[in-house]
Amino acid sequence: MKRLVIALLALMSLPAAAQQTVPTIAFDSVPNALKLPFDMYLGEASGVAVNSRGHIFVFSRGNSGGPAFGAAAAQLLEFAPDGKFIREIGKHLYAWAFAHTVRVDKQDNIWAVDKGSDMVVKFNPEGRVLMVFGRKQEASDENGPYKRGGPPPKHEDGRFRQPTDVTWDPAGNAYISDGYVNSRIAKVDKDGNWLASWGERGEGPGQFNTPHSIAADADGNIYVADRGNRRIQVFDGTGKFLRQFTIDVAVPPDARAAIGSKPGPDARGTIAPGAPWAICITPGPHPVLFSADAYPGRIYKLSLDGKVLGMLGESGKQLKQFGWVHEIACPSEHELYVAEILNWRVQKLILHAQAKAAAR
Image (tube, rainbow, N blue to C red; front, side):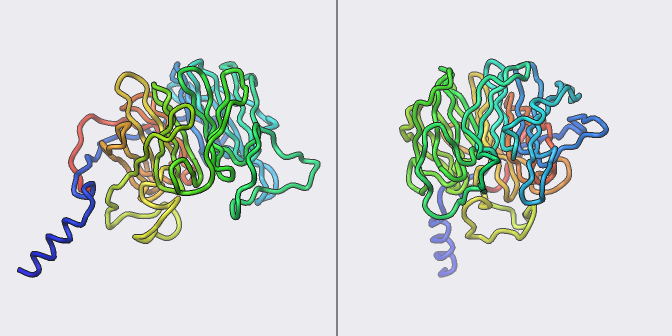
């Protein structure tokens, strides 16, 4: 009897979410989804986006040059809907240093976010530069990478320190997650004029620890993957905090780390289960949000209020496994493109409508 009481008390002490179930989404990965020329290779695939014509854009840490610990590594490639290689955009561009993400806006303009140069570049659909945001450190000066530790430096309008991603509201205002050092969100209007910024490093509402990915819904609400704080925060277009949610799904006992040691049960921050590395919101009248973590290497499907609707995948090197998903493109609820850092590839995923129950 005593054991039964203890067991019941233990069960009652678990959060409600831990007693629910989350469906496992059945899916396929399209083999050889991207067809590179014979003498071209992807490096770490850090970004992927899809335009209105189904063309696929990959921002890769390829075309590397320079010393091992100071290499320039950024290459923007375009593929047809069938995966056939079309072209390289911005070859030898001044802003190319260390690729982070790529996005495509409603006008099919292509936006590349380069963490290494502290710049965001907007291209038109033809691949010509329309706007540049931020400024890289001058090669003539004795500069080095920014330090992430210690008190963050004072924010400066118009400049970034290791930016990570970009999104837009219905009015065409752009929101840039700025990023590893500044830990804030910047807002510029459709003409490129700086409007405002909000946020600072910290753990409270409206504070960030590496805002790593960003997305907007049809109402102009801004979703920020606050990776280091293991949560997604939601704001209106003025930066007013609306809500936050976390992804709390049990980790299978046989889960593997994609690289390095398996995190412990009390892991926090970037490698913690559910920590959002990449987020994406589907278009259309019934949007959903997709998010990916590094461990146990899953992709999660959520409602916009944060309810986990399903999950798929695991860490590994085979098709249908993931090695640090760094960006997700979600042209529909049933079609995803995922860029992987560790596996140097982009997978095209087809999600099935059927699902089976799994413990959460």
